[in-house]
Amino acid sequence: MKIIDEMHKERLDSILILNPINITYLCGFKPSSPSILMVKDETVLFTSKMDIEGAIINSKIPVEDFKSLDEIKNLLKGTIGIEGSMTLETFERLKKGSSFKTKITNIPERLRRVKSNDELKNIKKAIDIAENSMNKIELKESMSENELAAQIEYKMRINGSNKAAFDTIVASDTRSSLPHAEASNNPLKNPVVIDWGAVYNNYCSDTTRTIIETEKHEEIFEIVLEAQKKAIDVIKPGIKVSYVDKVARDVIEEYGYGDSFIHSTGHGVGLEVHESPSLSKRYETKLEKGMVITVEPGIYLKDEFGVRIEDMVQVKNKGRVLNKIKKKI
Image (cartoon, rainbow, N blue to C red):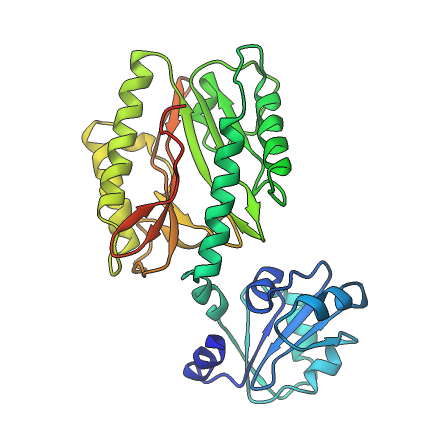
């Protein structure tokens, strides 16, 4: 396992993993109740009786019944890697009466950045489900934002999605200037920002399209599209995420809308819809071949309207857009 090699590089004798997403990544089994993956030369997944049958069938790692944290503590020695997401209560229980040292590590998250061929297939399938579902919806003026969001999520479920990757965003008229607006009972009125995603075999997709109408909408749409295209053009292994963000941001600033681009340019997608790396000016992470990221610049004019265009991009020798759905719907 790659995680063992990384663990040795950080001089860790073992790692305790409680985050169910990281357990899913390493074991191939998604626990529904508290579980602990103990990574060492003899790796074991400890899970509850509620999950043990499914874990034995689906886990790539040997499975044992999770009886108590004290039982696991007795198997640990040396320096133990723990996740930053571990609760303080669990950490205190783990350390009480123990002689081993602990060190926070993000090895699982680092490994998850680069997708395997199987992971990429699942992501592509999630994209296909989401796009095919959107293409089957007949948009009507009589629809509310909630009705459209519900239809999208229903279509995705019947087309093979495990669930919606997140609460579908449908924000129209002046509400389109709110990047993460919840769908409302307001009737649809252009522009309409639609941000939706499917889940296939636990892997997510994330896409945004904006339906436009007026010349002003078109003007802003073309600026956002130019920013997205130029950002995608610079994507390749070794490029810093902050540079991709800068390229998109520079385009929008040149047109005088810099203050209206109020979020980062993108993020990684995989088992979670938002994961590392973040395409932000705050980070110096370098892109690696095999990463899957979003590129989603936007312009949000307060009390007027907003436009966002989001595609998922695979980092190969250059950026490869995985979406097939048209930019204008």
